[in-house]
Length: 135
Image: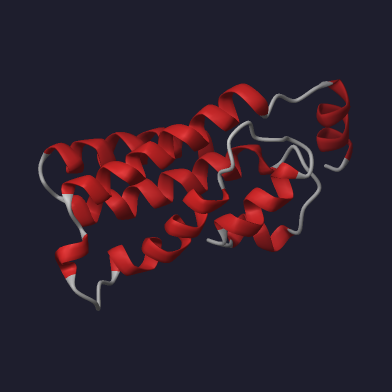
């Protein structure tokens, strides 16, 4: 599965949803894009197989950040994504929270996580050797 490509697709649709005033959908897709960007580099670090099938972006990030350090503290963003991933898909509370401004915050989270993955999660020769020796 190409997690990175799937993240790109979800990020694009999140942006289009935002531009069309579908803020709840945009937030949900932004959260999914964040998860997929993180999963795209999960194979470069030692991890539990359960993380690959989990939506727990906080522990996925913690696992990745043991090897790759982020210049920005992404944890507050991931806490929001963890909370609103399900709430935006299955809203049971007041839908007034899904505003343009709130949706824009999540698009910013996507950008921050993508930047982390693109610029700081670079595999070196040892990472690649470990990855391919395990299979």
